[in-house]
Amino acid sequence: MIKLEQLPNSLQPYTITAIIDTALCIGAGGSSGSLADKPIVRNAEGNLLIPASQLKGRLRHECEKIARGLNWDICHSPNPQTMCPQRAGLDSNFDREEYKISEDDKNYHCLICQIFGNPVLPSRIIFDDLICEEEAENLPEIIRPGVTINRRRRIAEESKLYFLETSPANIKLRFKGNIYISKSPFNNPDYIGALVLAGLRHINALGGSKSAGLGWLNWELPALSVEQAAWNFLAKGVGNNEKD
Image (cartoon, one colour):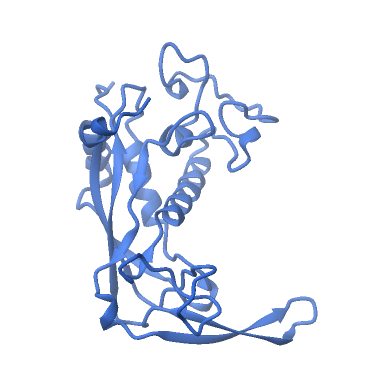
């Protein structure tokens, strides 16, 4: 059971900033107050934001790609049956000591699940929404037209004109927030911090219409090398395993 009063002592924050190089289009379905069919998502104060759920999902995907490229055995998300600990239809070697999170637990959880969680294991990484540092009243409403394309006929569909709301383009908007890493007594491989930072560096765009040039960005991350980051995350946020 997680007690709220324990959270401040068990989470280590790391500040990250996304700098948007182009216009950003992250839609808020069902929103009103805009002429656009797909308004951009905002918080209660009207500030533009990048939702934490989108960032976490994209980061998990990038970390999975890196892990598979390194030939690490990981489960297949997001289907619960093919994720740890069930892993239906998977015959990889998951019975590895570094995949066991505690002596009492009979299950083995791959590295990705140890970081991001699965149906039976809580996530050890928590995200803030990334909030735009520019005040909402200083940003104009930008509406972009679009049209639905019939991929089979390779022409525009009739009566399918729509409008998107985006952030202003080419003004280097900064979206800032924290990532929180949970301290844990579980087994902690020394490459968790490096994997998280490498995954963030692999995210070059967020939101919709990326192929049309929207949402491209670069990051301001903790000023550490990959090797230093791995051990810093271990010492401050992910555990205190000794190096072999």
